[in-house]
Length: 108
Image 1 (cartoon, rainbow, N blue to C red):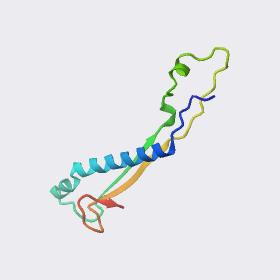
Image 2: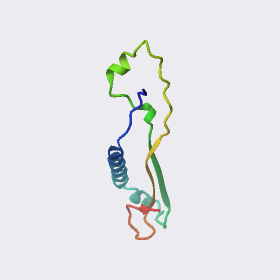
Image 3: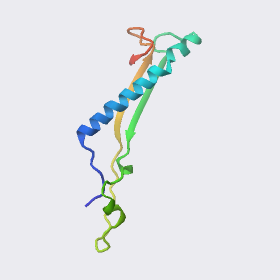
Image 4: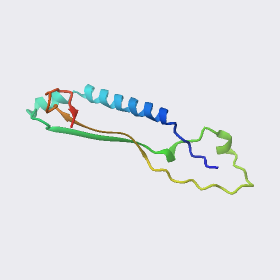
């Protein structure tokens, strides 16, 4: 038996959507357009923002406290298998948007 936590796909989808929403909100609140305007840098695609948010399943803790605190001494320890990181959000924005001119940007 492994103590790795399995992430429910529906919960993972909700997590992805919420992180993407929060990242978008933080960019809107940053008002990067006014900074570019201050320096006269409002040409198309002058600022490209790329971000990626990863979830490391190897750092998740098991919900089974008994399993974590009192391993069965009669059973050999099960080696933990390393699970690759999960990419939650991978996004690129151009500010201002080259298509619409929106100061909030758009997908590049």
